[in-house]
Image 1 (spheres, rainbow, N blue to C red):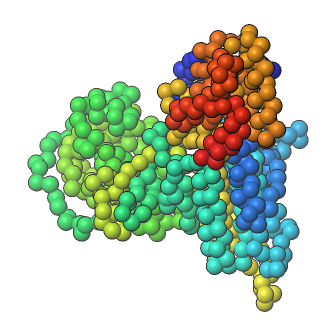
Image 2: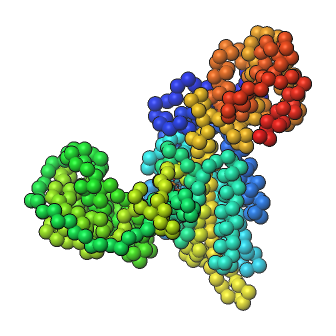
Length: 569
Ligand code: ATP
Ligand code: MG
């Protein structure tokens, strides 16, 4: 491709709203442009990267024997009603009306649609196991679209669904997909970790997330360097020493109500009242199997929801919506507290040993200071439910755990019969007995892979693409576009490399050399060939490797073998 003939709009500055490096560089290098919040256009360079990632995923998925399909984006309300998710999915599911006033959801994920297909087409155990996948645009009306394509409202996903006769076969399929995901992320050149994860609105019993390690990641994970244990912090276990039942001997001070105008978060309240997060108790209203319950947790701690769910033997626990919070506490979000609450209260063991705590007053713009258990409010149960903290030890080998931030690029779930049961996707087994199919589902975000790769591979000058997903492998740069001799040599190089099947970009734009060098670094093409005066006088061609900035000066005649060997590096 000749750059003078195409669309390669690079920018010196990133827009202000771009907070993380991948978002900034994706705009600056001319990979994409914003259309609306969380909605982007891929420009030619960016779309080539998406296609590269797509091809790697497709090749690896096909190797497993899975078949590619294309499910529609629009799916009717009635189907979502059958699974109960028309309601449960909430505002993240975008909905549109047709001319007959019928409602449709814009697919955020496709469990309903694929299960509907399976119940129509699969009748017998002889048709199982079956795995289908698609690579398609997904829509989610994210509450906070941000970080460019990392959390977009329209994005690209590979989603796969497996159907099995029994749990044992599902286990086999799950392992196969897990391995396939590793192959895909390895080929994309990512450094990642697979961690135990929560199943969220997709549901099911077991799931693993594939996390790309990066400080800008929205997820927090912990792992053990010794035994390999790894989990998302919201469900990580840790070694628990026996509870001592220790009660603080601090004297109880008189309760006080203080005005805290607009102070909702732990940071805001502690900043305003000049105290520490560990002096504060958070009152989180959860819906446990539909019923509101208050959870008390120390200000600097989080809740291990998985543990809470297990200890309460609940089927589903979800943070309550704002309406429920207002109804239960008579105050808006951010001012909840245990004093005067009429619902069941569960306190974490660390809260049970606190004295003179700060909490919301269940009144807008007010907090209480010096609240104490038993004197000011009663607790129904004390449970060990805080999430893991840096001082904790590995639950398996008692080594100190390591914390890291991660970007979730893929997620594998064992769904079991969650969807096949309600949608009646059944088959006849060997004995002619009707059984629900056992399902698994497996998602990968293509755009997230691209953004995560940039988070891991860049320097102050721009992107450093791994060869496997680079938009082009080689960039040929003409130093002086007015020099006919340079142009002639560059054209020759360009044609010979193209004949070799190498993906090549020719920077033949009428720009200063400095600007071209800057753009080459910004766009991050792995190999740069410079055609300048040396190429004319000394028959020498310069190849620069973007990854390590090493420069190789070689004879013109050695160019093709050298490029070949560098591509294999
Ligand atoms: P998150 O916790 O980040 O919201 P999720 O659990 O909702 O992710 P899944 O439903 O498991 O995501 O979707 C599968 C994959 O799709 C994710 O691993 C991620 O790579 C990608 N993905 C999900 N939401 C988005 C989004 N808003 N923008 C871009 N990619 C996304
Ligand atoms: Mg999500």
